[in-house]
Image 1 (spheres, rainbow, N blue to C red):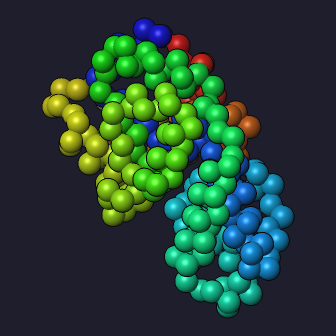
Image 2 (cartoon, helix red, strand yellow; image 1 turned 90 degrees about the horizontal axis):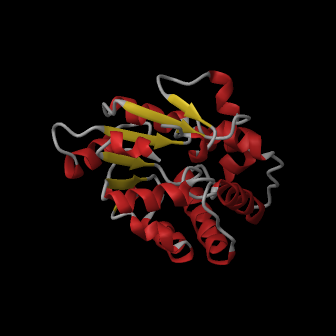
Image 3 (cartoon, rainbow, N blue to C red; image 1 turned 90 degrees about the vertical axis):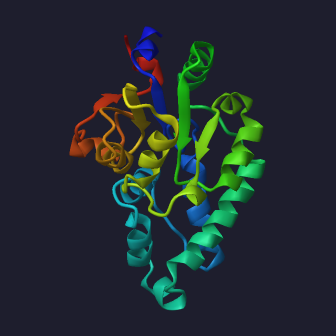
Amino acid sequence: MDWIQKFDLFLFDFDGLLVNTEELHFAAYREMCRQRGYHLHWTLSQFFQAAHFDSAGLKKAIYEEFPALFEQEPRWEVLYAEKKQCYEQLLEKGDLTLMPGVEDVLIALEKAGKKRCVVTNSARVQIDLIKQKIPVLNTIPHWFTRENYKEPKPHPECYLMAMQQLGQPHDRVIGFEDSTRGLTALRDAGVPTRFLICPADHPQMAQGIPEGTYFPSFEAINN
């Protein structure tokens, strides 16, 4: 894993990149809809299509799927809070796994003493639940969660904050994302080296890779 020696500061997204939580997020949206009397018959691929390109993508897609739901509750923040509660319940009882190659990378970074952090749109309470279940995540010393900044990705605010707090002027910075939306946030924050890591059959791959380097998993990163 010699490639980590080429960089000084490592910026990581979280959901779908380090931990396989995407299916739980999907299940939480389906449960939120079910509790309100609607059955979301999407495939996981359809969920990715809605979730990974635009911060408002799921809001738009779900309301388009169920116009009556919009009439019932037009305040998306209310529905999102219900989804969040469903997700946290799933986290407490669900089986969570790291994405392929992640554990080796985290251990190597700790041994090398590299500066590293997670920059995520997820809430702190969700992160803490996951860290309890996967102890190796506690090797990451710095966490920037949704409570720490105002604008969600693809806005670069969260990554700019992380670099301001952790970086030095001549640091070689690298960022990792599993979505093109996150890759845009890295680009607009001025992160020079950006890796998109997701399965090769992910729907977003049909759009091509916007100014980044692609790997199907951390295991595939070479030196």
